[in-house]
Length: 441
Image (cartoon, rainbow, N blue to C red; front, side, top):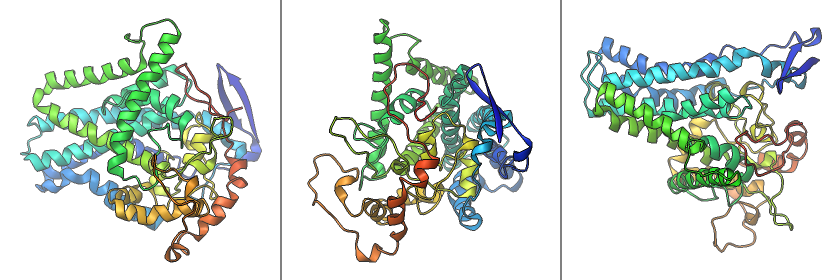
């Protein structure tokens, strides 16, 4: 068992003798996630020593070439922390410092990349080389949003500030507001721009989610500040002060390395936030919460998020693939998130599914039968495009039956084991800047 105490609003814990045999097998592997920004240095050194310019593309090659292969070879992550160690696990400072470490690595890689784009590094770069480096830096920025995501789900004010700093590279500071107070409340509803509809392509989803998230974040902050009798045109506006960090960062880098670096910085920012939006696309594709007679939506349940549980992607994404538990327990830190088989399951890890999402016909061929089968063939229960006339029931083709058979069991059992392990939470609108904390006792 774990003994817990509460100090300054935080849970602390220590293992008793009966729990000391449990060890986190991924404890030191998490440092690999914090070390991703080293890819810029590695690319430069490899190009410098071998003369092979292909190494500027090291980031995308590893992320979407090697990681899917390793995911397949290493397989599923069988480790779930038991209930009795959660408080101790969340209070262990090692895990917090792992996410903190990402930030200096992140901005060190940005500075190094700017030096290289500006002509430094004793190497000659053409446009293709610079584009490869830009893509690698963009992937680092996209993973920085993931680190910011974990830091933003906390009551610690200084960690939430670190979250904004991590988001500055991709100029996506409004995510701090929209994700916590928008997406977590509206997940899997038509009002949530970050929840993808059935048969919606990634290329239609990204602009809808980017623009919708922007509008939502601005309206949330405007409503919060006007409700307090203050103008929303103030640095107290969490959207404005987050954007200001990005402006300052870009200005400093443009002065330091000359404006020649700005196109590459804007390009990597676009790649970074498009990576985030692709993950959003995968996480709730086609899933929908029921609207109750009262006009409100049912509580968020494990059935409203797609999950995956591959070891390699779990390590590099800080357990982002265990998404149902995250929505059930938004303040639970990454190392304590748990997987339950009865939640909707993606057929592979995030890196592989990212590649599928880039090819809409292939994505729909794999995912649409899973969505339909999860809802027992009743397409009316899925997230449909607005004002689209569809038959009352649509069956999965016979050729897809064996492929999605397991999802019938998942749909039937989602109220069982998943409901026990991943406690549902109440969707409540918030005016404060505190992260959503539904489902926490």
